[in-house]
Image (cartoon, rainbow, N blue to C red):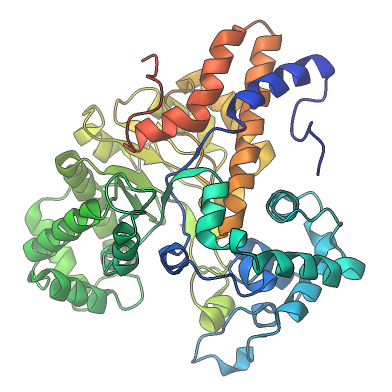
Amino acid sequence: MSSPHLLFPPDPYTRAIAQELYALVDDQPIISPHGHVDPALLADDLPFPDPARLLVVPDHYLTRMLLSQGVPPALLGVPPRPDAPEAGPAQTDGREIWRLVAGHWHLFRGTPTRLWTERVLQNVFGVTTTLGPATADEVYDQIAARLAEPEFRPRALFERFNIEVLATTESPLDDLSDHARLAADGWGGPGGRVITTFRPDDVVDPEFENWAGNVARLGEMTGEDTGAYRGYLAALRARREAFAAAGATSTDHGHPTARTLVLDEDEAAALFTAALRGRIDPDGAEAFRAHMLVEFARMSIDDGLVMQLHPGAVRDHNRWLHRSYGRDVGGDIPQATDYVHGLAPLLAAHGNDPRLRLVVYTLDEDAFTRELAPMAGGYAAMYLGAPWWFLDSPDVLRRFRKTVTEIAGFYNTAGFVDDTRAFCSIPVRHEMARRIDAGVLAQLVAEHRLPMDEAAETVVDLAYRLPKRVFRLGQPAAVLPW
């Protein structure tokens, strides 16, 4: 994985153009407008405990693959839920966790997970030894030695990674104390290097575990009467204001579908009351979620927060995994998603309002050309988010750029989003996306469909200027030509 030609077109002529374009973005600062890094990591700035707890335990891409071959997450250090003793205790010996992954490393051949991980080992830790059962201890020791050095603490790595802005993701119920500590150290707040993102799923989705209790807590935090629908909306607005004051420039909504719905206040209030009383059925829960997306679009027009929508995941499809380990441990599965009809009510109401910025993502690759590109190319408010999660791979990123650009162009997309919990994978994921973009642009140049000077401008726009502008993260270093 050390080849300078990594992910570039194979023919020498186009590859040379790609290398020239990539050189323009190799050292550009990283804009990471959406991800799941724990802000406490940077607020505490403590040394990482060991290689396994840094690179394996929080990475469900790794643990999920091993589960598919019969290795339970507990053996990889993932703590089971307290009410799931049958899962067994979590492994605490980092070296044993690492050996187990190395012993199954062949499972990751050809996957982006292997690409990211090997690039992390090489680029971040300077490890050139190929990982495998015979080299597990050697690689572990090399990483552990690096983690003992001050240069490998979180803030030092943040600086080395050349991250200009990192957005984390928090619930409205989070007190944002970690972000307050970062702001006190000059790292957070408006215009800071680490900012938060408003993710209200746990107080919006009536099917979310303990939803009614979460809504009550929301009322306690804001002093609003969340037993009533109007008080509930006022509490959400209050938390959005608090998030904006802590530096947030965007919200994020992880709904199972892209459905939106315009209800009058009485209809919405009736669904809200039924949900609080535990008397709402799945259709009613979906209708309430759909209505709330339109409410959030209205709020975004008022307060300027960019609205992101991440639909399409059937959460906790692996019910045993959820019962044993909880959420966000690799048990989710993509499903087909209808954007044309689902987003129609929201776009009819607000899609032509340039004050709204709606960045839409998909787990359904079929939707890129058929639905999303034409919609982003036809509404002032809508932008396309990068392929994420199951689609965050070199081949899909390449197909995304080629198919979407023909209909929506480059500038109705929102740049790359790494969407990761694995802090050390951030620079290599952005490297991968920049290499893919350089290759796509190089092909356009080689086919005489785009002049080299415009390709050079575009590759920097995609890597840096475009995500900074779309997510309202400050003035780019150079003015975009539009």
